[in-house]
Image (cartoon, rainbow, N blue to C red; front, side):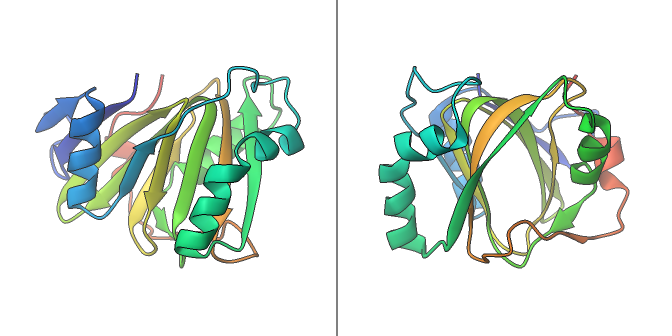
Length: 180
């Protein structure tokens, strides 16, 4: 189940707010400029599905976003516990960073933890199957896929070059809860 936990950026041990209620998650994120939605999922789409089949199954909402926001490219990223570079990839995404464009993900399967550092607070958002999240450009965040990753996500980009991170150099991500 999706979940949000909000902390002061100086107190990772004491949550200010926690909820698994979709409306409350959406409301809390909307207040800080993050788009969060639940999309219908296709039960026949899963780990066995080709990337082409996944993109075809979700073509309608992708095209809606292309018209609405102007995304130029999209793809599928899938990572599982048997991936040989899972530890290296996890560490890469666990460092606080930002992008020149929105970071947009729709979770087709599995889960991942987006953590956002905004105005003295840290918003930890567990995204699961059916969750769509759009983190605005220049917003500091990090992503945790856990030590045994299992997720499939559609990524949408304003920039055809794809995912390019600008790391903050901050150690803040090391202090906050991660996926276990």
